[in-house]
Image 1 (tube, helix red, strand yellow):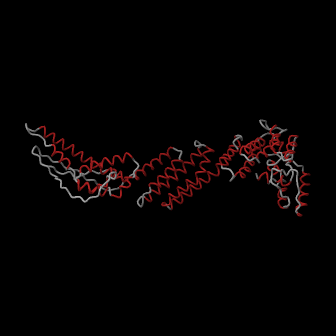
Image 2: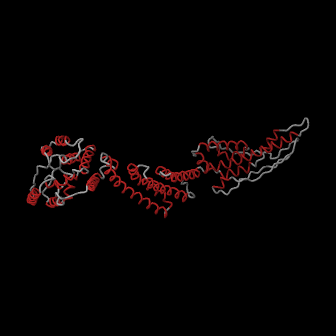
Image 3: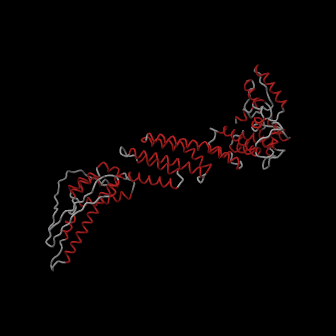
Length: 500
């Protein structure tokens, strides 16, 4: 850890509670030999730390100037060692001899499970420094815990007066925050935010609250800035909204996860930033879809962004709005099969209406027949079949469900719509003659179709019965769904006039 390796007290070769006289003498000795390149050794050049170069006069002067002010003395002492009691003296002797583990063992005897007091405060500091130099996260975590425990204790005043002037007073909370800030600078780039927070997990609520503020300020600001930037770019370039939305989602994902782990989803601040981010990602999807729906099929990109927004949103209103837009785009995605179903169903409905009306009329006639008379149901069925102008139906199908729509109908993921479409196609195909079937056979994409040249087989449109005479007429009907999507097409089912 650079805070310890580059500590001014270490560069100077002294302990943190060295007397003013020792400091002056050591400075004079080093500055005297530095110009001639002579290295000054110190008994505190512990073997478990890298070598110290004391031949650079500028570095030496910087180190000594870094421990002139009381505040600097306190802050730098927290990342070095001091000798106050017999435990310190024995442990530091072991450090000088290269036995780091023995030094830790001695200091832990008076710190583990103990409260900080006027007799052991230096031990908390020293064992904390050693553990901050540890290789594992657990050691560093224990080192941080020892330091924070010291700083927040009433005996921290003893520590301050040991390393600084007797009259100097300090704010424990501000010093704790300064200590945390120094460590966060060291950990940046080395540990993830989540791992860094875990290193402080044994600290009390005050430190946790400060960490929460530190960790939320930056990600909140970054997310807010990126939302605003995306909003401005989207307004001037709607066709680029998909790219902007994806970039916004990806760039904010880590910061949002950090906020979630720190604040939780029930926190008002988190809810607000999550919903604002979700709304902007959603708006990018909506505007991209609207901008390009007449030029290409933008449903995949639009739904991608809306699902990203859905994964972020917290508020019920935001989620409901996202859901509504997803449904609208999915409806557009199913446009081809929905159009096909609407047309085919209108034909089937008209046919079944005609069938019911004709059979009703026939049964009325049947009730008045004389003895020996009967209804020719074969001709009635022919009459029903020919009550629809199938040539007109085929023409409408060719216009409304062209061959190029079949791939989208075939790839539709809505099982219910697919099943409905197939049943309607089979119903219509069953009513057509060979020539009519051959024109729209492509509708049955699930069957193997052999291409042959067809010959029209004429079908009578007029049926005569000796038992009764009747007629039926038609009326136009508009398919509301088709109107909604802007076809402007009226589906007219022409019913043949049938007379005996």
